[in-house]
Image (cartoon, rainbow, N blue to C red):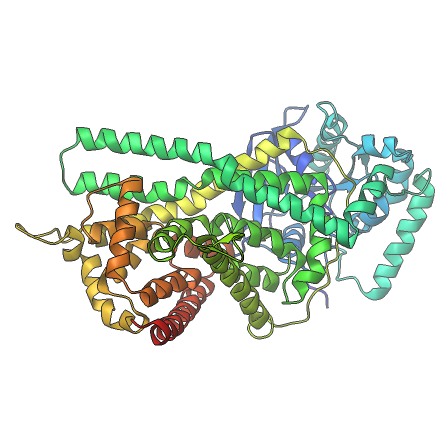
Length: 638
């Protein structure tokens, strides 16, 4: 017998309207037009799928709560996003009340693909409104849609909308009022009518297709055809050779912009934090509270907040590519290439963004619908060389790699070593993905099935609203967790304080210093001394912290570039070359970044995967460093 999808009670408070539709149908633009800034973003309980909810006041003065459900092609649900949409509209989620009405949003230029979902929604037994979106584009393409005929054929209200115009949603608001009034007058609740939806069989799907064709013949003046400009652009962008070249050029621009465009705001944030720290230094007496505020909170949390401009630049590009319709083309072009190691075409953008910081890269993996593909992408994201590793790389390279030209003078040796470190991370990540997809995350590789929407100019309002949501999500989800962790790291490096008359740096007497001495025997086989072990402890908060910690351990009083130059010279005399190479190898593989691990926990809603990432990559780092140290020692001596 089919599952009983009814619920026992309706929700309290204002009536709830759910927006449902295919991906790229303009549903988010309609949601933004309805709610404006009166919206909030969270995750559904137990999953990492975003939940967007907002409020608006109808023309009749009714406060209405609207939920923007994830895009779906069918209630059959083949991805986590689609499962959430199915479960909400069917009332299967205990934490989510069933919506009183459903607004099914369709792209008026692609009705053939969109109408099958509408037919499924009709079987839910609840009021359904069809929002015929993007009517302006349909008219520009010469597509004549008879809304009255379409309403008669479907048996539900059909309302033309243009979500990007100020007056483009007024007919929809009026229809929502009428639907709510009818429901109230008839005493209807979300459970007053039986749900007639069941999992469609192959025969049902054929019937749906036949119904759609009949409706199209009745209500559409002529069959929809691809937009002429879209077809002409795709002739170039979807060609394997030219398309990949243009895609790589765009990705290169994005990669450069993440660093160059974000540099000034990052410097402003850094300057602001430094100013605040200076004021506190001048206005507070030395003591644990001052140290907590300056070193733990400002220094610790600031090391995460400073990446916010890079995240916003990254998501600016991602949102523009998504809204313009190009993201689907990028995934299509790269799907076969990424498929060689078992990854999905959509994995390329998150991995590329991880070169700036693994945190936004992992967050960008939300665009991957299949859970196993998404997990595989997240698990290898930390192996892409992030900007936090660069201070460490440049310090060790400056200390041990001579300024020498190689390859007939075309390439500098330091640059070649840096490129090799990047390449090692990329190749190892692809190899790990290959292994994961054939072991823990095995299964048939799902083909990349997606609609290629017409090209559109992104709307500035939607882009800015999306950036605001991403900034808030990053600061709330990562910032609160990181705040607590930074305080813990500060406490480890600060207590107990150095005894009176101490001759060694204060950190030598702290819990972190004790941990360093305790770990020294464990790290000796890979060439690490206790000073390196001490640097690795606070380096868990942020990789680049290791440079400052090494300066403290070696009792350098300089700061900034002067400290780095002095430290490079000191390390060149204190460390052996095998130790330096082993240290670089460790930084290629080790996941010593609490921000990354905490975001993995948040995104996958599990402690198992961040633990597997930490222990798996730490084991890999140890093994690779051991081989590097032993081989280098045998070849060049210790």
